[in-house]
Length: 154
Image (cartoon, rainbow, N blue to C red; front, side, top):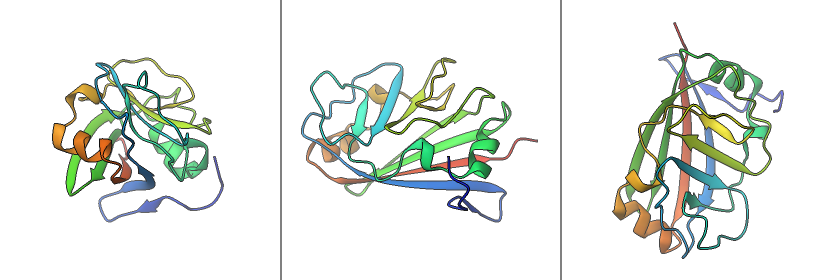
């Protein structure tokens, strides 16, 4: 986590962090409970939750303001994934145990499980639910943008 003001605040009291990554030929997006964007420079066929690799930022890079907002159990967190002219939106929530300490991966979880890679819990989609057009674009190596937004809890 950095002290830098990398998160932006917009007029609707949302904080935003943006990550750039790229697809890979082994993207299958078949995992039923998670989806992931990784900073790794490789992807094996076993990585069926991974949508993109070579992320230019990791959770540990995010601003303290953004992290603090995500640690509110009432916060709504939205992950927007854009690639190949397609967009997918995943909505989940924050949790007091989200640490954003990981220096490798961003994981959205449909469950309540939290580890240092988790960026949201209670997600309304996992990798298998992602539109197949965006999955195909990522499997063709398309550039990807992951935008994480947190709406401040009441």
